Image 1 (cartoon, rainbow, N blue to C red):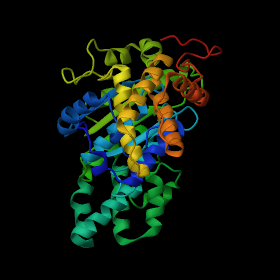
Image 2 (cartoon, rainbow, N blue to C red):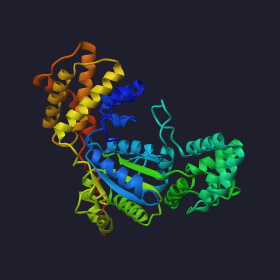
Image 3 (cartoon, rainbow, N blue to C red):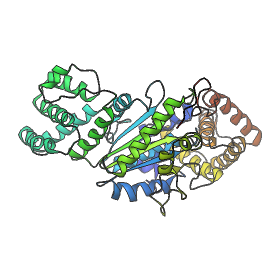
Image 4 (cartoon, helix red, strand yellow):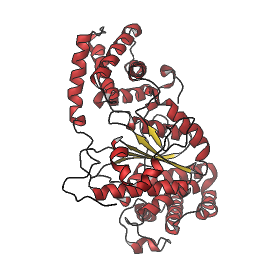
Length: 439
């Protein structure tokens, strides 16, 4: 993943078109194929792969806080980690946290979002994974039956899955019952037990006969998430990579919610330290303001996260991955990114541009975007501008980009992105009307 790729030899044109569409439409990372346009964070990915996926996660667990400004590559980085995890067989779940849709202080909604997003690597030729816990269990059953038949599949469930270490007896029973029903083709059991596993409201009497005696609520949803991690390993999979991304920055966050988020993060860190989330990597992506404005008010969390040394190959144990400090300086990084995008665009549209001319254009645009945007969202700006320029040249022919034309493109792209970027990161400051919480 960190090596230079021969785009034309390894990238499918359909996937290339998907990548370019995502980049051009809003400067967003593609759902799949992020490695083909990734530059600048390879050192972090190498540490996560070598130190964690190849070593620590074979029995242990870890928590990392990912810091980055909006437009500075947080979501991009999480996509990179997800695809890296898939190459090692891990089950992943990428969860977008927001106060309305999925607040991190509501453990039941977090659990529901995690199981909805559970996925392994997409099948060859697919442009997105087929997510969901029940989809994962169905795929496992299909593989078991294809390899050894229904009888041996049932035997595996009875001898291996039913004996897997799990905090919640009810959760293990739900997994076992679902697998048995899938093998038998019992749609009625699949519906009710599947709903329970997805965290939906289910009549307690409807699942009690299967040995499921707990009702999933906000009070026990976090223990159910731990049980999910334990059962993923019990199913014979390498482990889980959970990726949480704070995506909504438009709502002020009151002290009560901040405290709840802080308590939940501290709890996760402690669980990882005690290996109660077996074979699990937990990444939580936030803006740098989170460490400056929130964490210092919670000494227990601050002590766990604060480190005098940065995350690197020399200090892989450091808890914070800082995306404001990348492998390349801004302009060289954008030039390298532009070359990757150019190759993907050529494959997507079956065209060959003048490389010398286009690399000069890339250099001009890179310098312009860095000059215009002093914060790290110059990457998103560059992606949008360069994608637009490539489409214009596809329609009207190649041009040599001069400074005046560059400025017009940059200003136009800034206007398009303004609606997303105009708010400042006040979200993690207490609301004015809320009473100050005394800790």
